[in-house]
Length: 588
Image (cartoon, rainbow, N blue to C red; front, side):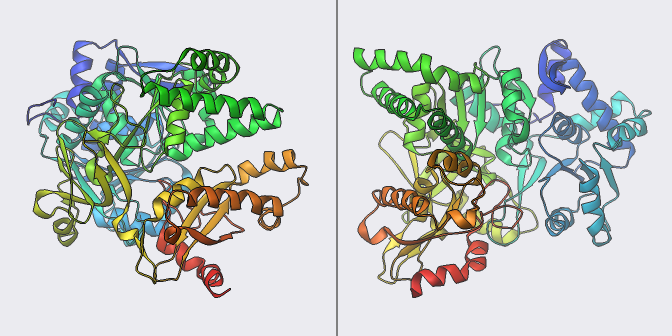
């Protein structure tokens, strides 16, 4: 375990590095189509200038300051400026609705907001009358940062240094509101120590091989999510070069930035695999890709069973030239590791990517655990599990199968919600709500959500997550929801992936004008989904198997309220909105 003094806070690493190695490159920021290096000295100066503006604007130690933006360089500057001013950062997803914004700003008593675009500022304006405590709204794209810097020009360096050093490890650093798959989001109270200790123990103590000299990452997941935020902090703490991108610009940015490791949710890896498979099929190389995929998986499995034989090594070498090298080049050519979290990855994908030459380190954690609680390590991987606890963290399994966590990463509680805090932190352990098991070597496997266990009319307990994960692995399936609580059998709502349908139509000779509504009734699509359901059912008993399914004409989206910003399905909302379709499966 990496220990740090109790006085350590999040601002120590960047300011100490700026004092000791001011010329060290710590970030790269997009400048047109090129990446411009940002040194430790430059970063500290930018952070200080914004922090001075916050102090001049009346932000006091402990005050809440929100950031509403996509992932970008300025977010990291603002986060550290808020902490340098002694304040508490409150992230808000750029896609949040007026109601969600009102709740987060109002519940946290936020005094100021940095809003990225004109549209974001307009959305906040819609609810500002309901937020009497909100004093300032600064636009990132509309000159707000320059205005803040100008406002703080008379604040001295000594004032900022005093503010910065006034915070200790036990002080609140951020309020991260949960995604809210059920009910109103709760604000998780995460301290400076939570972030410093968790990031150092994850990067230095658990996956040190990833954070070597010259390592870098391109962050594209939302910084409003605790997973990306922890990686941001880990990069600053560990001197890993950090860049920022988004899904729209990801492929070209990966090519020019050339990171050494990535972090993503499983859906990203599924899209990469499915896209490569479909491109190969469209180019008439479907059989080659299938053979290459089988070889990669076999090669990875052999690595944990005494090593591959000569024949497998030769096949692997051939496919490395034909297929694997091109996949690695698509993510910049230098990626050796990827960290996956947020949902189950699936053994097949884990083995495939390791066989290709990109080792995915699957981990597990929640907002309440400052992201990681466990992770697979480069030297100790067990694909199909989420790894072992990071140093400073303990896992145990309750009698009912619930995963309990204790350690340096656990939040102090939920903001303004003593009842929920007591319930979650009962007996000194954080109750995750997830079900899991620990094997003899301490590797954790997640088997489902405690509250999402379905109990059929016959009394059979069914965890929907394993079935849903297998179904989503099919190229044509975007999302799914397994249902059957109190029913005679298990059923599923399935949505189609519009991106995947376009090349699929070309390959099958279907008219390009066919819509999702047309395709969901197409015999070939139904045959594909039937096959996916049959494959998923292989993982469960007959009583747990999906007996009926409905292919929907629309996808589950965040905009429709069916998904959280971190791409989790809001089960209760989907069941309400598609109640007629669910009833149809049981009344037919």
